[in-house]
Length: 409
Image 1 (cartoon, rainbow, N blue to C red):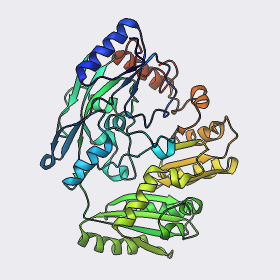
Image 2: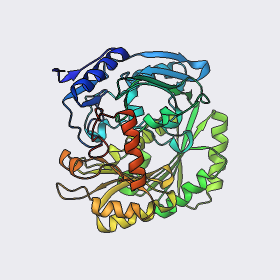
Image 3: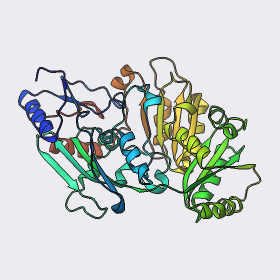
């Protein structure tokens, strides 16, 4: 265990490395392509276990709507293979590189699962966790484990897929992941509604989401965020933009976009974006960075009931100026507070979110802040105790990404 960078090329190599780490009590930092290495708390580990050598699509059955790939496989490689067959990852995994300043790295499929990455379509298609139907991994005991298969209803016993998704590599080293996939839409239309306040925007998004027209994206961009868009109709509006995305067959879209206009029942100006322009806007909303400039502030991801979204944002920004935007019908708030160097704004942000039963995660901040403050929402004592027991069951020696999510765990 003298090498600082360990790079196996198969699952057997991962088993060997983890067992050697156990024998030498050597903690391991797990890395895929490195695009999210600054997400979470800093890991203090003697060696780095890189999954970059575990690459390749292992099974892809377009007719059966699933794809399996080794954990180090670039997301772009999987998306390209799916696009050739007119399919996609329906949960639209966010690309954190622009936000975290890691543009020279490569997002991987294992990282998608480890961080449970999802984009605007989560409100309809579900999160990465919901579309994950199989995993292979090596736990902290040095045992190769697997769960799930190639269809949605295949779970017997414990659903390890759900536990591993969002665990940030603290429970096991993912070696292969299997996802359900869906067809790409033939046509996309985005309805832009201009000039609404945050509460009005939330109410309009709720009407859209409650309609029978199958909304796949529902976001509200305050005027400052809209002005930074690369879409002329959004950037040139000079006011807030509330966006609803519809997908499907061209004939269906033509009907639904007009029916949605009537259903929204608003006097506000409305414009419709076509398929290509919609793709630009929703990629911006998904990846956040462009709309939240400047890039030197901490960035928070706040999750609340959509009903509370505008109120929470208002309480925070009354005390702490911040750039922000709303996704998921106003249930997801991206917030970049204007705070002094060395501060994250937690003293203002966490109480406002906790008051409505939500949770707040620091997505971007300096290493000193991430080491000193909780990055993820602190858990109530019973849940924290349960999380500790799960960690002990999967990784009793505390070898895998120690401290990534919680100090000392």
